[in-house]
Length: 460
Ligand code: 4AD
Ligand code: MG
Image (cartoon, rainbow, N blue to C red; front, side):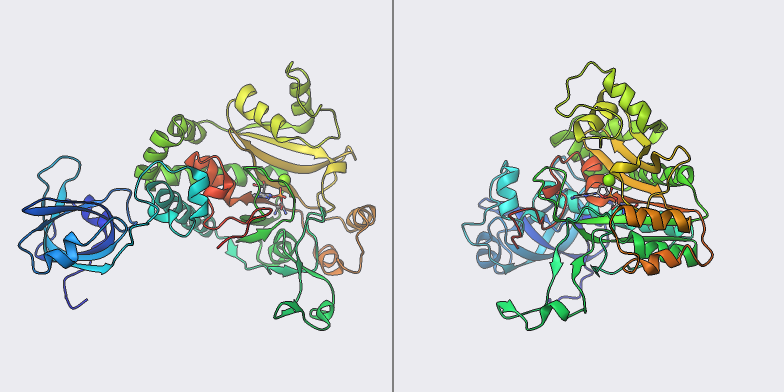
């Protein structure tokens, strides 16, 4: 812009103790505009805050007709002027405009004219929905939480590791993977099978590669996208989601649970401290019990029960579950939710699962029928963290691989870690979107990720 005024973000202006001196500039999108004879009121939003910045534009301004009267909801504009104490209630400061430039006109069919669209409709306009109050708030919280995750680990000396997105190994052993193949134009490229010399997939987890780095740098974490071809069309599953995976050397299951619980608590506290306006909005419009629940999580220690204790509690609950429970079955979301929402009414860490339902890498317990695995369950969602101590004993790991029909050759690099200076080590995966659902109260995973990928849907 041909103007040297300092540019302010709306959030900084709204929170300022004193109005900045002289003429300043704000830039954003029109949320509402009311034109009267003598002047116009414009509510401008630049995404830095839930709140809009109120601008008063006098009808005597140069270019008033083309830049103000012609503007409509959704248009982008640049405004310079003096920040003054606001006459109306609701905000401390407003701007008396000196100059308004309509940067980009919004056509009449701008879909976000009115409030109260369904979430379904908002998903169909995922390219515009960040301009709404709800999604602006969700994605500010998402950004803050990503920052807080790095802060949590960096403060504790963990090293951030980038694990590959293309991989040849199926960490979780569930076989729910997406093939990666080279293509040319529409068809498969010649010899696509051979591009990497063997079949490759989008990673389901960075854990195995993460373990190699933990066995060198001691404490590491990954934070990246992961992919799962599970065909479960639920509100908690996405085909592409982000996961945080710390891995700690010289660490057992107990240490692992400590870090997981501490991390979840830390992130919630950080959100309460740094996203107060956005959380208050969720508490009002999305989930009335949200703030109370979040405060409770920060104040109260998580409950820990073994899988076998959990099974007994479920059997004694008198509930008729769709999937009956007994030792050896995987806990379903109905079971997880009973434990956290009804029985304990707080987050619950369940540990020592039966070996038969868990992947090859988990450490076998002395009872020889359970493994040192743990899941953190929270009310409203169920599992947000899954982790374990890893099998560090060479002979038992080799036996596990064989039992899971995995080839020693494919995993030789992983097994090597047990040959050269093996250490007890443990880690977990925190589902980033599940955490965000818990912190915002938003009940569908599709609404906490910018562009959701789910079975049958990869728009945008
Ligand atoms: O329990 P999972 O499958 O564990 C692992 O992948 C381990 N390799 C982690 C580790 O020990 N390093 O997944 C971890 C978490 C789950 O607790 C859940 O929060 C999330 O990832 N998750 C999903 N989130 C969204 N959509 C899906 N389809 C998800 N699958 C798992
Ligand atoms: Mg799991």
